View 1 (cartoon, rainbow, N blue to C red):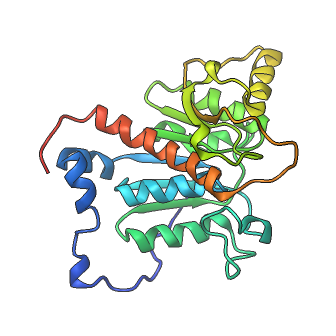
View 2: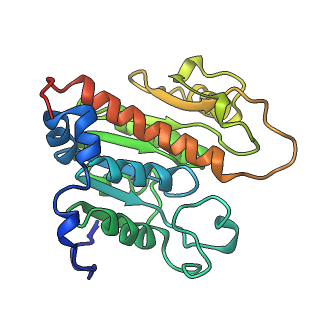
Length: 249
């Protein structure tokens, strides 16, 4: 992983002094904010879902986020991916996203790996060092491996994104345990792969998915993919708060 600690950022003004999380702290309390700051999240896939999840995590105060994605920004990403603009086309997605996240919170630890997670590369990621893993992968093979690998470690909590493409209604987004997801092609493909290989996730895990019937025409829109990413971030934030003793702001 590469640590983005050497990026030059504008000096903060006095008005910005330690106050960027004050509205969050009013809602969740100081102990939760300390827990956020000490939490390590591995986010695999920084596209239309993962990029928005990363931003929500950093804006909420999560102290360490590792970004994994092999791709570079292309023109077709601009309609839905956070870091994709006319100026960033051709750049590594993880690098552009890391710069933005550090502009939000220069004290965050942002690590990047421009690489593909797969069965062959899994050992390189030290997944056991993270409290949370966010699966925002499109590849069924890589997704299935990440799910099984992360859930084999008792200390790791995994949240997974199912299919966000070909949908228009963000109000149809749901969260539930994987085996209760219905009408989702990606979940169906994962189940088929688990059964074919005879290798199943060792624990239950929560997914973000949509019960909207996917449209026949291909395509993806930002207001749905972003809502998926924000829901994933929300699952992490709520889980941390549920495990943290209450303390007034």
